[in-house]
Amino acid sequence: MLNVIAVTRSVTSSGILFVPFDSILNIKDMKTSGFRLVTPLLMCGLLFSAYSVRAQEAKLTRQEKKEAEKAVKLANFQILDSLLQAKNFVLEADWLENQYGTRVPVLSSLNFIMMKPSKVILQTGNRSGQGLNGVGGTTAEGSISGLKIVKNVKNLSFYVRFTLTSDIGIYDVAMDIYSFNYARATITGMSLGKLVYDGRIETIDNSSVFKGRNTI
Image (cartoon, rainbow, N blue to C red; front, side):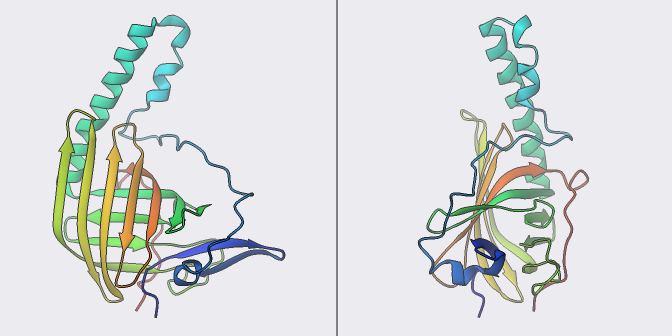
């Protein structure tokens, strides 16, 4: 029984092997030498990039740079607030992480959390085109309940929590979303273990995600 809806990957001598996340939970010594930690860059769209400010570093004083970056974060904070209140956004994951802290890079177009006013979709996938959802992973779609959105005006960040009820299980999702457009969501289910989506927030219109068939 697949208790936590995810598929992640480990490196083997023969290449890349995709396995159910429940199996990964019991592997504490996965090799991570091939993984490289990166700071997620911001995508094009409504959200502004603090990095664009740095392109003018030579022309700005230290105080001007600080004020410009603060203005960008404030603008992002207001945009994110609108998206969250409208329940209309996508968290695209660049990395997946299990309960042991093992991180693997993933395709953001196939690994995402999408929230709409009437439903939520959680999905994992890969290029193999196999898996329970036809795109190498698992897809759970269902209703949302217990939605809680907490704004931290001082830190220009948000904490979002909700429960997804789908055909394959009930999942609790907790998100930390920051105004420099970094987002981290932790998913727990009916068994021990967790899955973390590490990425960024996109508007649904600007998102490039591809949904597979629902897992049943």
